[in-house]
Image (cartoon, rainbow, N blue to C red; front, side, top):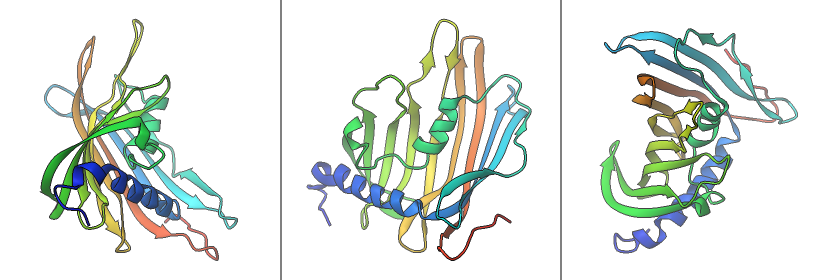
Length: 226
């Protein structure tokens, strides 16, 4: 354990170590990921939607892969999901501050707060620099005092990608985690409700990513989606 006085100096490394353990453990699990993106009109009503369901599964040879369930639904009118959007869904919104990524970030201790009925340290996380092609996180994370698990994170995947010919904008989001099998905290859901400032006019979007059916893979069995 660390005291409040010691937390700022050690917190990022402790959280990153635990995050690396969490990432390695999550890689041993099958789960279902449901992505729903809605574009909203000026009354807040959905006028287009993208929805896809994927199962992360293992073969009997322990090869991990993703399997799309059915055909994605797409009735979006003004928006198009880009490779960067899918990279954020895969690599930024679920897990972020692992030891191999910590060098990318500068962190600042922001105090203590009870979040989701858990006593937490609060840490601000910002990129030191962003190299071409990188996707990074800019925001706040809440870290469980007892075990240094990340309980919640709120922020944005960066950078926004704007050229004279195109705009690739990304919303602010929140990811909430819950304990799985009593030890590690895995993403339970990600949500965003934000207005993207396109040159043609703002576009409000609503994003939800649900992570469900976490099951630890056993070598003698194969996960079969329901």
